[in-house]
Length: 326
Image (tube, rainbow, N blue to C red; front, top):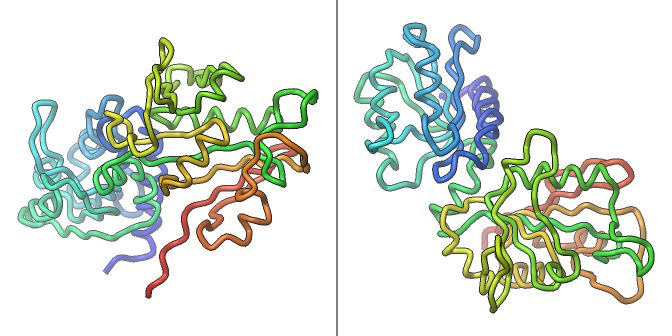
């Protein structure tokens, strides 16, 4: 039976996996820990470009010390061989480990269940313990495999009454420098960012990552348009067309009331990031009243999963509420 310590180690492996997002593309970002007598003796996470895999790195670091230890890994070890590297299930089976605890089954039909079976066939106790932190760390991969599309984050800076910009003449920004820097940290976790035509023409956004040491993580730039995209951008004809975005596991929709409403109406938003400025704007101007503070508090569709202060502003994170049984 899984223990409380299993859950803690899996959560730690999930945090480690975050280091691979999004550079592990096209592979999932996986985290692995090898634990012996309550101590971590090796760790690994999926490297840029998808290889080496997390398990391969951890086993290489552990060497002979892996014998009799426990491997905690966020995703079921792959069972298919590739020209780019061995199947992790085979590496684990030959490792001498005593136990393997997996936080999320792999929906890829080349592995689904087969990785665990191969490990058990080698005499290693292997358990699948569905873990919420592990699933969250694999959100983009799981979304691609099960829904055929990227995981979509809708990011907005809003006033308390749902306006997207301050009144005319009061500058460009609703939120302060800390909130804007936090947005760049989220950009660094994305494969692609999308805005609407209105935002492109009004703001000429760069959509890059302007944090020290993270410039190379600037994502692809996409434009929601029925026409052509400018140089350096790619065009997306409709929200539903995200299914054809090759190699994109994580998409952020950043700009414009119309683009936001299009994705919300299509029920294609998996996470809401609302950077809330502590002010009421009122009057004309772009607004999303359905995302005003009172509307979200009363919503049956959205549940708040996190909130934190960012200087004078507040970050609110929402996900769709689980469907209730009929």
